[in-house]
Amino acid sequence: MVRTFIRSIGLPVLALFAGVAVFGMASTGVQAQGAKRAIEQVKGDVYLFRNNFHNAMFVVTNDGIVVTDPINAEAVGWLKAELKKRFNKPVTHMIYSHSHDDHNSGGQAWGAGIEVIAHENLSKNLNSGQTAAPTKTYKDGYTLKAGGKTFEIKYLGVGHGDDMSAIVVRPENVGFVVDVISPGRLPFRDFPRTDIAGLLSQIKAVEALNFDIMAAGHSKIGKHSDARDTRVYIENLMAAVTTELKAGKSVDDVVKSVKMEDYKGWISYKQFLELNVRGMVKWLKDSGKV
Ligand SMILES: [Zn+2]
Image (tube, rainbow, N blue to C red):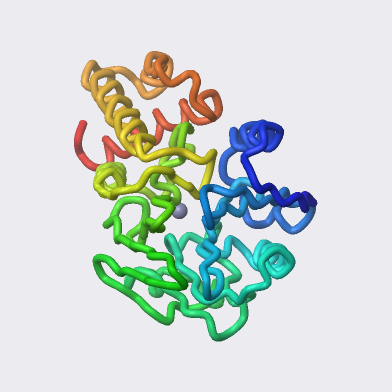
């Protein structure tokens, strides 16, 4: 278990996570033993908690600590001990990005008395006992002021799920975005649990937010322009796959010809490209676009 507390972005740590990030999302089942965990400062009082392939943001305020996705109960246990050791302040709020259980299990492990904030669609999507129930829900947007920090929470609409929130923290101007954008990385596998047109509008909703640094649920720390870059990748992929399908090619031939060469330098290019193409083919066919 990695117990290193990282105050700045050390090169060895970046190398470590660049290495593991190519394998993408892990199931919660593999995290119980030998989980790789670390805390990385994003900016000012904003930190990213890394748990294997999943990240969650937390923010230290004058009054306590605001956490985001619990990931799972073991991850909460580790982070709880680290926060006590490093900051010795109570956790006052937890803000959920969305309901998917690989990010949002085990929230009860923080204990009672914490304000839990989520989009109003989230509760109906939780499995029984999955995580702590929200105590405060919102519809379009919600602003939390806590201990000298402002959290602008924004609903991103339907795409990757129907309960997705982005969070912008001020004064640091850090945006926390989960699954919709993974900076510098191809989208995960074959766009599971995602309507791709909806995903594009969720990304546009992120592009409309005002922030500088992107702290994301997967991959490396990015910047605002990673939203646009990801949208353009998906639009280019959609156009390329559409052209090939309209030319009458088989799915296997589409896979052979759509190589997205401009994105060779992105994380998980080799692992996810074919799956991205197959996911796009399926979505285009299922939605009647080809
Ligand atoms: Zn998700």
